[in-house]
Length: 400
Image (cartoon, rainbow, N blue to C red):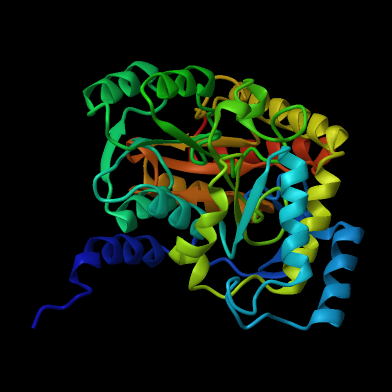
């Protein structure tokens, strides 16, 4: 009998080799207490958090927490139903209204996770005879949405405008086409050339979907993402986002101005066949989103943090994923998984948590230490972080 686990044997062996050296499991860290958006207690010691995607630091905002507690008292712990049955409360409409106001768009549809937002919208829009043209470095949820809808998948080289145009030119003019892009790519923290890509997509009769999960709240004058920053937000058909990053809770969404958008509520399987978000979650999300509309000071400080950390790591001799800071994500490229894991543990020993990202999740089979800055990190904490990177880098031989 075939062992269905046998396909995982190489990964099992790699993991066992790493842990056999006494290394702390980098994918099994337990946070015993979360003190603030930037500090937690891990393994009994105070640890600065630099790998949480809590970009705008909203998780401990007093008004956000109060809204969640109030909804928990008034509506209970969950809806126990789908949005198309008993699972739409006033809070679900309120968070969709907040999203429409935030993006200045006509329609907003909330999902139980950001993963489900991509899974649902992509698989529903593009079917068997349609084409999805996507950046090869797209998130797993985007690829899974393509697979669920059974569309024809046409990948192109990462952030390559000419490659996108060549792919579009080869497709039948009459076919349904959806170009899927991301504002910020989560592994290296680099941004997409949306201005050029959207123009090319429209010229070839394609609809455009942009995932702004890692830019919402932070990038753009109003925090609407890379599409806003590059002046093309009105030319994009669908924007996907998540509540689990800048908004500080959990959930996903799609906003759009398409006049037929509302029919998706009846035909999108990951929306129809999933219980809706708990009332306390949508209350925290709605409150957070409305506060992010007035978050310019936080956005400015986060950019300062990003520039300072990027410049400091570069000066220490670390190899980074981008030449200049493009987002709140700064990726440190390591030579291999062994030294990446050693560096990750050395940083944890210093009192710093970052993400260890490994192949095949990373582009080009790179091993990365991914840093996610927060608007609540103080300038002094960024100095501390740089000192921790220097100490860990020298101890592990990653820098000289």
